[in-house]
Length: 120
Image (cartoon, rainbow, N blue to C red; front, side, top):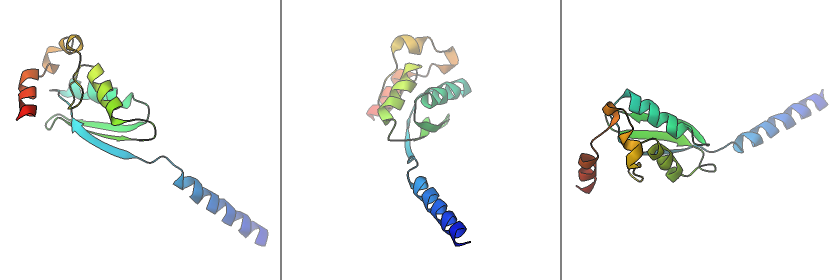
């Protein structure tokens, strides 16, 4: 009986120790320009394609994305680059003009207006 209790205690301590080794989750929030539900799907899919991303949620009204990620696997700049690669400007990375122009018409946000807002 004592051996069984001792074994259970050892297993419990090991599980507690392993739990503390699990990846830490960080949260980043930043602006991503877009207009509609199609933009939301594209932006979130691009962010979630980066290894180490747990979740991504873009808000059409505020133009803000909240990303939960493992900072040991990914840096936030990589997330910005992945989103810009599919045609959406972020507050740190501008999308390639050719990619932006290939977005559906409803997804082409006014870039000049957005850059003026950043300057104000």
